[in-house]
Amino acid sequence: MAPTPEILRRARAALFGHAALWIPAFLTIILQDMVLPLAARGGHPGQAVAGLMAAIGSVMIGAGWLAMIGVALRGETPGIKAFADGVNTRWVPIVIGNVAYWLVILALAGLAFWYGHTTYSFDALMSWIKPVLELPVEKQQAALDPSKMPPAVLGWINVAALWFVGFLLVNALLIFWQPLVVLRDRGWLAAWAESTRLVFARFGQVLSIGALHVAGLLLARMLMASLQPLPTFVGVALYVGVVGLFMIAYAAIVEDALPPPGELVDVEA
Image (cartoon, rainbow, N blue to C red; front, side, top):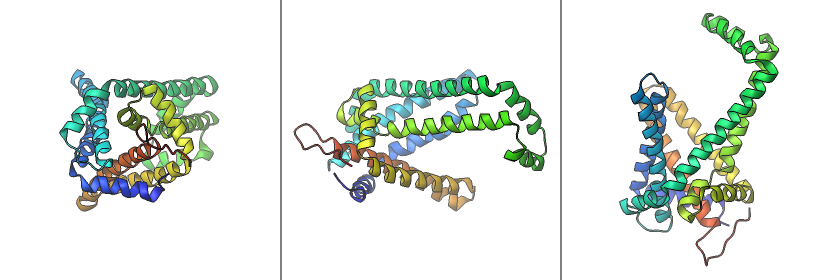
């Protein structure tokens, strides 16, 4: 098993050795962080269409991007052919897997809402929220003191927190599913199962790389939120780099743990 520093070294070498790998990362971020939020505001059928196209486009780009990453990790030069091959051959399981993923997330949200409404009542939550929103900002802050919140509101907060933990757990267990689909020709359901197994097999490595990933994203977001020209520019560049670097790192773990048939397989943590 390649140690974590070696995995990160391979990811850095691929990202900074092949400028083409930055392009899909940038396009994916634009679609997911700019077009999708604008479309989610609703109000016009065109926005819904734009949101759907952005979602499909980011999925397609992701398939081609992972194919390019696989080529780069094998020491070859990634280009448009690798991108097109990834899209053309793997877009169906990638799309189906993403639809299934969001159905799971929505099912968890529905379950959380059902439990919250049954236990604490949604009307009780709304009857507290509406007056709070009408308060001045300083009084809103006082009203958000947990000691002053009704028990039903605190219950809803706990339900939301529990759903968020479930959301994080699903994402952690499925971190490798798309690289497995593209790089190892797995069906989406088999990739889900194999990703879960690989997460537990390399738990320490996944935890350390995941922590660095989250820290990098948070730092980039903080710089972007400053709204100052230089920090914002640095934050955007850092954000693109972090997204690209860790996508390659997860693909590198798949390449290391599950080499092509005929090579030694090592998935031990």
